[in-house]
Length: 333
Ligand code: UT7
Image 1 (cartoon, protein in one colour):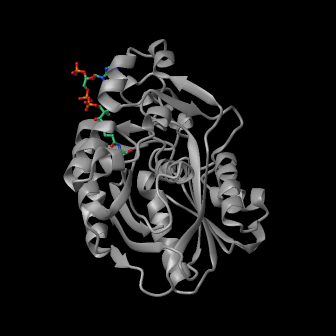
Image 2 (cartoon, rainbow, N blue to C red; image 1 turned 135 degrees about the vertical axis):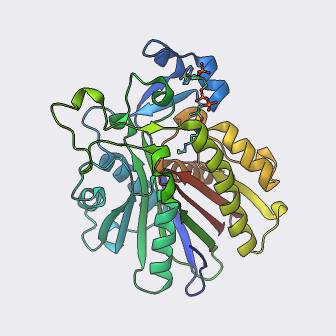
């Protein structure tokens, strides 16, 4: 599903992020499973990840990221009319994590709901909310990517437990004013034929956790990494190229590419295929690992606060995840 935002232009008025305090290094994991810092670093680029404290939920992290984005945007919680949380690790199956965030912020004039599109979720939320603002249905939207993946990891499975981390990122969207940048083009896509490649098989209605199956830890992430890797490179390349073309940009016009932070080898392959030099590709996965829906949101906030791009610059956001899902956005800041 692709589109050029053609009605009211929509701008990103503020960004924010939050990482829980506890840091787990590759060295720490060496004492947990049969792995090495060397294997994790060379195969993924990850050196550390953050882990939520006991009692710290996805909604708590989402709220902290949201407060920072709202502050930067200069928008009060009561002026929000839309909150979308992208997550695969909700506080509860129902109600939506967005409802807890609405309560925490006191944003009681906002419609609030979650979307589940794994690592692409934040860009799905950007697409949905920007269309709703562009159409005039909503004025001020808060979109959040937030994950507590540590609750859905089998800490005895070395093929997955070294990859993921917890955290949250947020952005506030509203109609652009004169002279402000906007979201120029977006793309989102899904391939449901590949659901088996990356999933949390248990804990849902298909396979509820019971006393009989509890020991099998089915409510944890399972991934066929090599297969996912191949799809990730081609889908992200194609999605990014689509929005670049729709935005009428050339590689040299792009100030920064912010890709999903899953594996440095995937990021390098994407940079290569987009013909964008590595110094114009944002990487922070060495600090946080793969935070799924939060990854692009955290990276956008960090890159923004580190002034990696300025008013008038073009940036490309591109993500890929379970589903399989993928998404990209071309933004003039
Ligand atoms: O966010 C959603 C999107 N997700 C992704 O994009 C992830 C995509 N996939 C990947 O990033 C990579 O496939 C992984 C990082 C998950 C794995 O890297 P790989 O190069 O594909 O390794 P592999 O799975 O083929 O495993 C190679 C070897 C195996 O041993 P044998 O069979 O060759 O003896 C694994 O058992 O590495 C072994 N291995 C480990 N060794 C030490 C797997 N995990 C570990 C580990 N430490 N943590």
